[in-house]
Length: 587
Image (cartoon, rainbow, N blue to C red; front, side, top):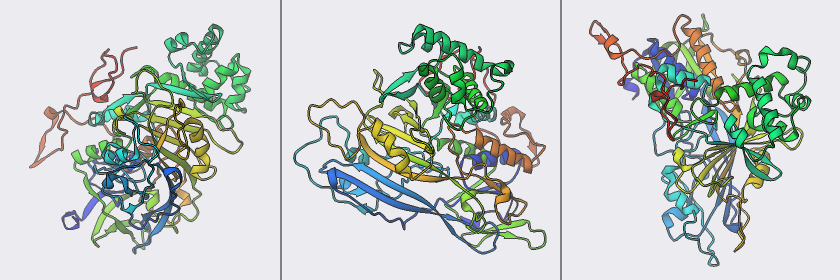
């Protein structure tokens, strides 16, 4: 592969997360020669420890190391970025030795080739990559019930699971949706609407009314509460026009501000945790009003909730922009590590990279994702942490007539110093899990380890893996079939000045943040693009085929499909939505 790479590019991008992929697509679309590389190392040195056999449960603690290349030295300088993980697996007896005796305790690697950064998403669970043999204790007292999902079935259907390491949703009027439509990249993906927003109160999960119709049809709210809620939400839609309504409350939290309004405690809870989805202790009044307005503004564009989710997971989005980059001439070389950057002693600018085969590749500009820098380069950077958990369960947290619900739930923090936990539950029609199971993502800002932060919420919503079901007892909570806890580094909002001795033509791209949406990734990509190409349009739509003209013997790259952005239509959103075939209905 290295022998066939050109020796010179305009832009080299290292890392294939969402902001890097958007940036690469924008540069390629503007005519820049782009090389996009990603090491995507498969870590074979991960160790398992602490395996337990009690109650057919396996507890695995692992440390996953990720190589980071030197940014400023002409020689290789590797640093380690540690992600601590714990894997919990509900195991049942199985007669199939191929599926019952192997457990992947280190990584979740994919059968499907994926262009996204391994810190951002993991496409699927593969039985072929499993390396540790773990004996399963026999249990002759209980046989799996008919139609009951077992761990061995999950192993057999491993290719059906697409597990994102970063759990996010798309706001229907967010920057990413607008960019997908503007650039016509939306034709490369399909999306489903989030069907319901849930709340957790008094030990119960209940559905929250979102639209005007939902509010007035709700049996959870009294008639007086319905009027109160609609009046307050109407104000939030245009709160900037009525500064007297919130003037004097800017310095207090949104939670305290809600108490000053004529809202019952029930309504305060709904607005704070299920609509604004803001912190009870850290979000200001203005932050809460903005979040509420954004939620309401996104309602109704593609469905009854403000959110969309891409089929096959968030990892599809970087791939879409990588495809756009490739269509316009970008060069991709994955699993291709960069040994170092070569810096000119006089100008202090970066001149080239040296790849794993020793090839020197020259470029004018370099974009590097934060995790690729050495420890010396990042010695002054103060990182936050994100606590994550991924569960595979056998039923939904709120059972309804339909088993194909996609839900988001916010569980408020209970103790000072802790953070609210965001729960996203995906059904099999999202193409992220096998039929009969649900894939559940839990996310919060870290205060302790991921397990310490998230396990209390897991125990409230699900049957812990150590508990044994009692015969003839009606179980309302979902049963955990598999669980993974891990911490991730949050490098968002870190100033460039915090990095040591960066050359002026080396640009830093942060990893994923803890937010629900993707606005930060889009803003970051556009800001970096404007620094390199200040007079260029950011990801314009591709030209129509009839507008392409020959320039000598070369042909300007073109998209294979029609590039015209479709006009609005009044069709209602179907179960699976392709944004390339839909645009905002007329209001």
